[in-house]
Image (tube, rainbow, N blue to C red; front, side, top):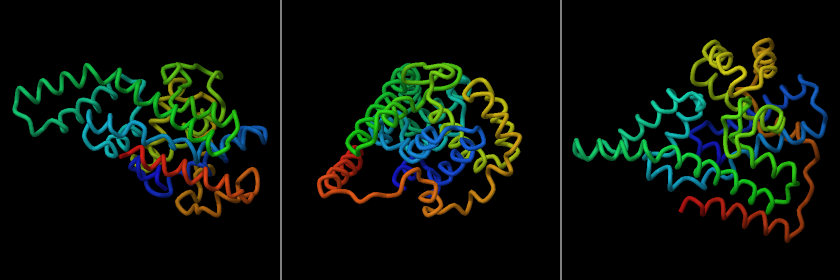
Length: 260
């Protein structure tokens, strides 16, 4: 819930994307080990989201609004990314005088690319550290280090391309974008945007599968509950030792403190 709110998304966002990602993985015939990774990645993807809060707020103003609007665009398209950054820089500096505001916007544009790399890379690093502290295995930690990778190799932090990007990462990124785009543009608008990103942000077979089975894949998502997500969990919940519980609480406290 905390990561949903930090992204400017509804509280059910992670739950819905987890269920959709599961359905896609099953349709693809992914092995159980991959389905387990999909489940964890869908719920953990943004646990490092507070890492970049200060930098984003300094550059763009309201970082929650920025994250919400960022999720709707294709950052691999320079025109879309440039328009979003320019709009937020202009809004963040609206109170300055004419020339001062212009100068601030120009400086922001010059800094935005390097700042974006630093911000998104730190998000991956923090997510990996938190996952390690919470006891997740090496595959889950690896996936959290690939948060913003893309099928076409234009992603971050390492520019991985194609199947070098873990399957769970490809599926969850696609599922979460599909949830966002459906909410923002409706089923038909989302389908058009998803089709336009085929072979770019998204693996072609994911796009084809979604467009062929969108109604089935998205059926009932608006009513998904936490119990539905738990029912899909690859392993039953196991009791934690006192030490494990304390470490989990400390990790979550550190997550909260990142914002301060």
